[in-house]
Length: 231
Image 1 (tube, rainbow, N blue to C red):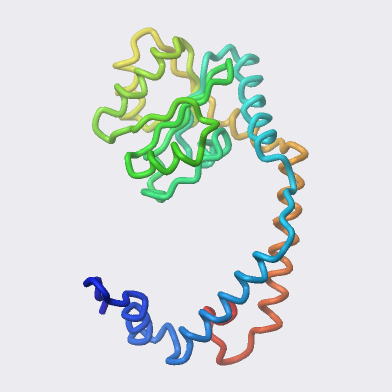
Image 2 (cartoon, helix red, strand yellow):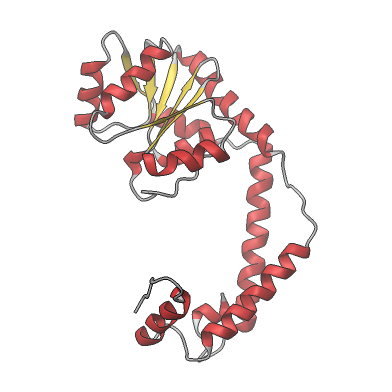
């Protein structure tokens, strides 16, 4: 169904796949595209405004983590849970986004930020995340050694972590001689649970947008209307 030869039209071919699967009505693709294009144009004409200063918020979140480390006597944090990686770096993975163990962040008590990512995300992340001074490719094989090198590079002797499987914990401890690994998963979650003012502003705006979207969908929804038409 999907013809990728030179000069072909893959979008049209893909539409036939949707037709065969019963996902899209025969007249649906064109109408849906026109509606989507109209929405895009309307959005482009809207005035751009920021709810918060994103760069400032990012710094505040890192500052919260560094303050936590100093209270707990930690040199650094190794974050493996994707929500904590995102919180500490604003990292939004594309490749392997469903694999929680593909990404890590490393934050020192001095505020240094390191991102460890799979090769497929490295170039994009390096380009769009200039605030991360140290970004490295992390491999499935030899991962413990790569993380241990980060410990050595930043002279970290007492490192808190949010999540490590039993095998991963022992592998990392084996290659990180002289480094104390401290389970700080619950404490990190508690730090994140106490929201900053800017985070609350974003949550409120997101709730308003969600409510408006649902109300608009309810007005358009009726028997026989497909989900993609409402979207």
